[in-house]
Image 1 (cartoon, one colour):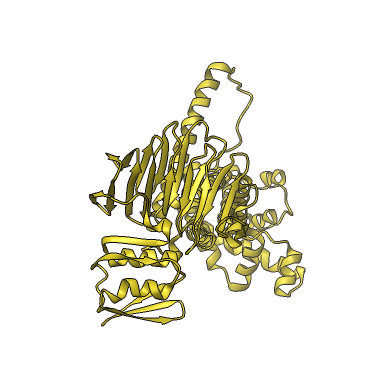
Image 2: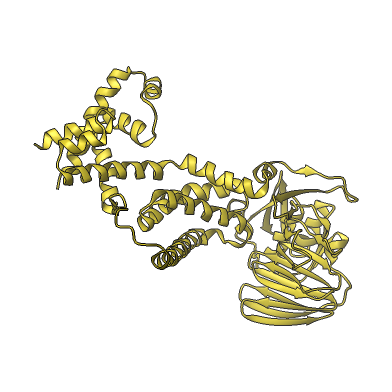
Amino acid sequence: MPDKEKDICKEQVFKKVFDTYVEDLKKFLFFKFQDIETANDVVQETFLKLWTNCYKVEFKKVKSYLFTLANNAFLDIKKHEKVVREHNKKVLQPDRENQSPEYIMIEEEFLEKIEKAISSLPEKQREVFVMSKIEKLKYKEISEKIGISVKAIEKRMKNALMNFKKYMDEE
Amino acid sequence: MKENYDKYFADWMTGQISDTELKKLIPKDEYLRFLKIKKGINVLSEIKNNEKSWNDVRQKIKKRNSGLVFRVLKFSVPVAAVLLIFFAIRLFGNNTEVVITTKKGEFTSVELPDHSKVFLNAASQLRYNKKNWHKKRELYLKGEAFFKVQKGQKFTVHTGQGDISVLGTQFDVKQRDKYLKVVCYEGKVSVKISTEDFILPKGTGIVKNHSRIDKLNITTGQPSWLDGISKFSAVPLYLVMEEMQNQYDISFQVDKSVDTMRKFTGGFVHHNLDLALRNVFKTMNISYQKKGNIIVLKKE
């Protein structure tokens, strides 16, 4: 029987689906692409596709629909990249002077460790660390939000970073 | 030594030391480790920032829809038509995709670019591309509609339960959840359900309910709902109740004593709820009580 809370074509339901799966989708795609911008683009395209096909998708199958779309997009992009690379090999002169910047790979375990490191911080330090480095707020904005001076924030931030680094270096 | 590095880490992360200065102060592998941590934090920040992602998705949808989608989902636009009905339209930017949605208890008629006509029943949605219509006559249906198709190219209706194709004819398509019913009133209709193909000559129909498929023979000239009555022949009660919920703004609260799988033969009117309830439940020996919008059902 039709259910109002399961109609993905309704904005509230669509938003709820978005909130439920967006983060996992971003992580899924980031670890495949190792590039957060591309991951973000594909996430947006995936939800756009869900929207345009909302009447065709069963609510209980939405998770597998989203991840299948995302994975297919990843495969398409990789296929295209391969074609471009092959083309470049034939057409362009190899340029030995041109070095790509250091490629740094972020593994799942590493990202998890960062999250644990942040959780391990004492509350006051964690608050400032999260607001500044995760939510990207300026010290002035943080000061207004939690009611302490910018100087005090600087001090907490320094301690937070040092404790954070210590945790990251353990094991 | 390690503590010094941590100190450099804090100063570098807060912008007091630049990358080039840092490179001079610590060994290369430490520097790469620093970069990795900074990148990891940035990635985490991007992953956690879902407000921005949501706004980006909305932007993309708006771009496709020329800014009307979310607004229209909240507000219906009243349109003066012969029958004074309300329906919601979503116009998709350059693509000129048209979406027509009816609410409970409403129905509307649509004329397609080739003068084919569609009569859309309650709680249904129709989508088609206006610009590409002359190239390909296809549309997407969720719910129930009656089609009067002008002779011409292949005309295709996609539903979640199957695809229907015709060449100039009159037919009715009803799709609700896992249920699909197609009846051909004139001409010939081809119905494709997953991998099976069915041809329906005039006066026949097909019903698919979950995985069960039955053929039908029809004697009337057009669907009864166009006359303001919904008629059923040996249809499980819960489907009849579902259709009532589409025609009236009600929902049902069903006591355990009521068997909603029982077959119902008969009809209910669209213009009077009390009469409609009587039409259905009196003959089934089910008592009904109106509590605002909720109809409570119990076995008599």
